[in-house]
Image (tube, rainbow, N blue to C red; front, side, top):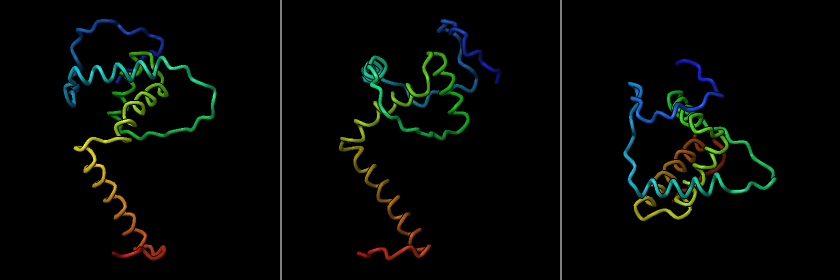
Length: 131
C-alpha cells in the first residue's frame, strides 16, 4: 500500500471507483445517517474542558486499522476524535439496550463470567460458589 501524504487534501472526487478489496459490511439506512449526524455534531462541536485523560489502546486487525486510518485521514480527524465519536455512539445504546439487544449482551456477559470462573477453578485461585 503506498504511503499517504498526511498534508495532502482529499481529492474531492466522490465518484472514484472503490479499491478492488472494498466491501461494505452493511448499507446504512436514513435513520442510521441521522443518528450519526447527531453524534458527529455532539462530538466534534463540543467544547472540551481541560481535564485528566486516560489512554485507551484499541487492537484491530491490520486491514481494519488501515481502513479506519484511510477514512480518518480523509476527513482530517485525529484518533481521539474518532474514538470519542464511537464512544458517543455506542455508550447510550449499551446503557439502555433494546429488548432485542439485552439478551445478546446478557448471554455474552454470562459466557465471559463462566469462562473466568472455569479459569479460576483451573488455577486454584479460590473457591467459586456453586449453585
